[in-house]
Length: 209
Image (tube, rainbow, N blue to C red; front, side, top):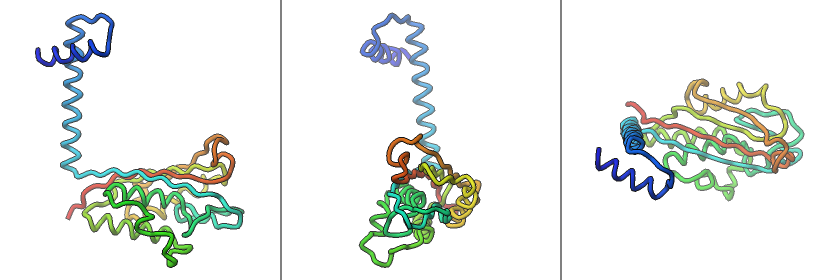
């Protein structure tokens, strides 16, 4: 404990010029020690549970006359995301999150735009293929959290249908799928209606055989 206090004192002297008592140093060292223990235990738990975390992002420009398909659900709209496939932005972000969690690259690597077979492809079908890769490597989905950013159209009436489509593709319950929609308060390219973006975060767990 004395060694820890001495080390913490040296650290504090380099970063803090104000007066501190020996009691303050001791308490600080104790808190730091507890934090290190908690972080170590968390790391061990993640190793034991074989957890993997992934994050994905995608953005597309809106084009008049394009179908607006989000999370596998077609939204009645005069415009939609432009792209080689059906340009389902949140599903693309989700696929990147799944691939990223296992360091498998991104969707451009697995489904390149140069592949003519992918013209207007159903992104939900591509999502199922990505999830097959996840399972082949011994993992399954714990949960997914998707955020869609656009000024219009409003999506509140379609959220549950979106969750159901995603859950079916990932072979899980809707309780493990979160889909949210928000705006950027008329700021940036989503705020002006020029385009749409989406983020997705996933937690994967080791598959129990």
